[in-house]
Length: 368
Image (cartoon, rainbow, N blue to C red; front, side, top):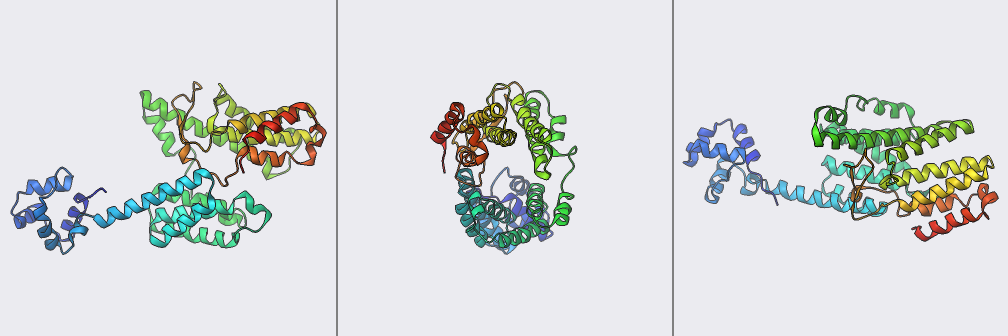
């Protein structure tokens, strides 16, 4: 447990409106000693702690910020356990844990956001699509309340941005005006932390930063293109182009085939293309897309207990911590793709040997 006296001592001294010299004279020590304590370069002799605490009217535990250290330790333990559940897609267990943490620390914005995220993830669990799930309206209302509380009580940039994102995503289901209000609160595309860090950093550190940012940009572009057909039913050519672009720019970035975590995205785009080609009764392209869907669904390394390293030239400094990946269900890509491929539209190729081989391979790796 980390014990922090320097910040607490400086705060207490400033609240009492005294100088380091005054405190030093009271304790019978030099002002230089107090200066070292407040800079974190030294620590008071244990025999002085009661006198310092009495002088400021606090307990020794308060002086040492022991209570704060215990709180931080407990919250970090909750966060670690939450991340474990999210990595495995155990959304119900994560929500239960986050409710427990919130009951214990109802005013901590980090805990509020964890609960907010858990409500959002559990409400989006695919198993609830068939009914029998949670009261989604109740989930939404709680997300709204938690998000507003975070915005009202913290200046932490990351927490605020995360809360704004979830508020926007939740409101877009039933209130476009509110969703747009929160969308307009977000940062600008060009002026952001990652972009500016890429401009500043040089040498190996700069290359690594740019590769990480490039990876995020390409994935964002890929997801944006793939979202076009969801906005409106377009022509087949337009929809095929959108999903093909989304797939191809990822495969171009990871040109050696080592796509790692992004295999899930590629397999989804291939599945969407297979649906479109099946509707066009294009057997060859349907089967080819099903084969690619199978290939990348099996390649998806999440969940994993190892960091994933990429090897293509433009991403060979990028590492992905698989333990930080989150899922909305315990089922993997193979499991859900197999369900999708049961659709009657694929009956015209179901007896094809290549189609049957892809189905057989995915069944070997499917996890519910």
